[in-house]
Image 1 (spheres, helix red, strand yellow):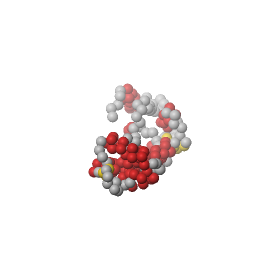
Image 2: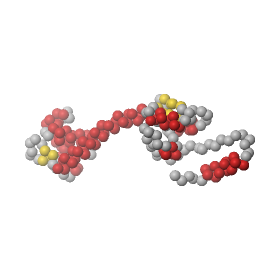
Image 3: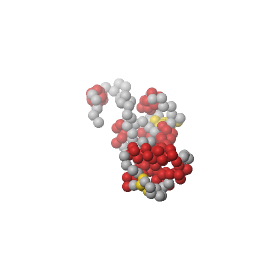
Image 4: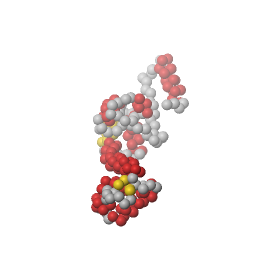
Length: 199
């Protein structure tokens, strides 16, 4: 069943008259009557009491009307929401702005790989600043899964369905630092990231 058919049904239910509903919908009455009959055939129930003047909904018709009205209202909200999300996707927030190359460059690369050319790129130094800008609806930001644990007001986390999007983990240390503590830490890190991490 299409949204168009739900709009026809709602118009007839609200006008309680096929002629007025057809005028409201800028169509003639015979095609509208056929559409309502099609809806009833699809549902398998009578939605209007036949012969009643003005038209009255059956019990099934009242239930169908409530659900149709709700679906139409939600569909009317969908277009502006989609446009808003598209506008946000055109503005991205990346971090850290320095030093480079960094996770910021991996974010830009992920967007390029998916043919997303942002209209604006806001570079910030820290994750918390990036989340603040997202909360302020300045743009969207790619973050690692581990960031989901941070509860930032006004921020909603969405998983990326694509499994081949990843970011390497980079460990830096001072040149010539050969201390036993540093060597032990490096050894643990290498062992930890050789095997798959469990979430």
